[in-house]
Image (cartoon, rainbow over all chains, first blue to last red; front, side):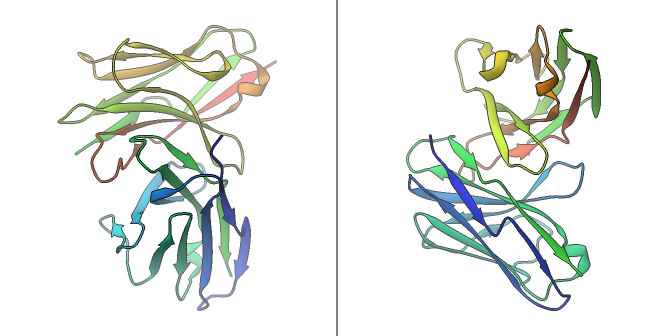
Length: 116
Length: 114
């Protein structure tokens, strides 16, 4: 089956630093990847839609300058949290949509970010 | 705009009992509906999906869901639950736009007791 990986699985960083999270589709090409944020015991909130070779589309209320998304290839999208603050601490999950498949998308295992 | 409402935040149930997790949606166009399961500190796994056709959809692990257009519902059911079904369950909707952008409900925590 289609596998999506995320790296790192967890990261602790100091306030003010930047953190990059990678999302990779391991055995398929993904023209579209989605980035979600999940607070403890809450649902997934869509942050942005990332399309290969073009700018990401951010959801209302998500700061595009703070959450930088790059989708450089058909198998890799990155989310960089810039100048992280404790309130950015969360579980970040990506999903990848199989090129040409319509609805089919697969989720990564998530990255837990803790900002101290 | 799409939205999803999961009516129960927690559902405790005894092992081998039946369970129903409720989900209602709103959308101005045709929808695709999904149920996902999330185990602690893990990503989401697709349980089942409704795209079109038969309104009764069967998924993995013995789960099934019924699409009811008139009631805009997509409730998830299992006739007999196991301890291992304890997890968070998310109902989700997509109208196919925005690259199949998917909106998730708040989630229902199923807790199966021995």
